[in-house]
Length: 94
Image (cartoon, rainbow, N blue to C red; front, side, top):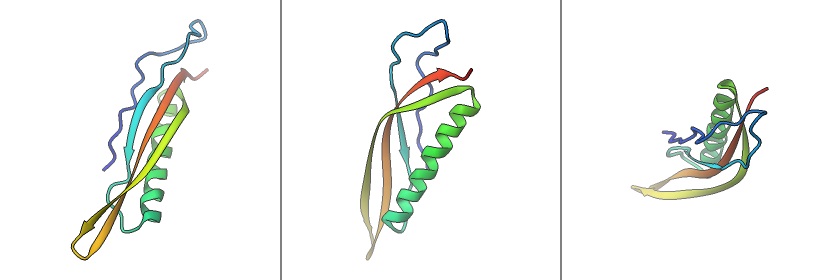
């Protein structure tokens, strides 16, 4: 499951060049069998999110990104979930 919060609080045009306020975006890989699989799923989620923003006419800029991997025991095995917090700022596509 991917949880996202990506709607910008404000939009910007060429006429308005004020400071951009970063929007927090939370992404998750969902439970995976390995750290590598969790990171790959998270990478796909980040790319998909940025592409969706571009498709809507918004140009995202990643201001900051923090990534963690959460390990959860499941019986005798473990599952791994990669989570990320991105601070994104947006501008309108020209």
